[in-house]
Length: 308
Image (cartoon, rainbow, N blue to C red; front, side):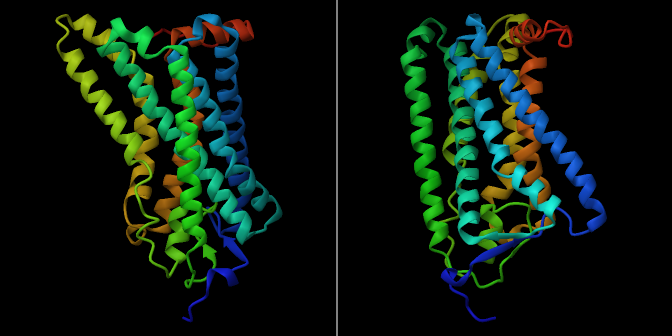
């Protein structure tokens, strides 16, 4: 096949989750419902934290920002996919494809850094409790959030510029429902070694290091009830970490040549749609403070199940 320079590629074809027409209405209905639950659930978390002064703590401050990032993360891919299903259009201009990839990476990497900062918050709360108010002061929290945004913006911009420099020689059909990094690398005939830098290495390393210290500290607690209470403060965060990284790590940290299109698409559905949707349920159903505030917002007792 003749080499096609990237400047000659004017559009891509997004083949979506399924090429069978009879499945499109079902997919449309499922993903409309999941997207609405994702946006509304994360918005409720933000409102609950904003309205209750008791939740104005570092952990909930970062949780509110994580909920915002999750809602935006899903919004970079799902609405366009729904439009494509409804209009039966598969084309996406080259510039729009890069723009979608840029914002997808922006909020995806922001998720990573926020999960890393939340792990650090749990580390300070458990391992350095006497210094918590100083190490996690409001000013420190704002600076940590600003650092997350700055690093995220730089990383997303870098990878977008690297992608824009690639040449494509394997056609313009993307076996995916959005412009993800891995499918685009599979179409490239350029050297993609630089673009395959592990996106999650930094935040994931911070999470692993923080929880190594947390587990070491908890195991030194003499009473079983004390260890259980300490672990319970990390339960919701660890659940989100496992859900997000469990599906994203295989797609993003392994060479594109080792991926099958179907496997990538299923994994992408989980970390772009399912995990952001479950975020609201995990933090609301496993956290008594959140359940109390949500009851105040609605005046009903739908979250009256047992606490942690």
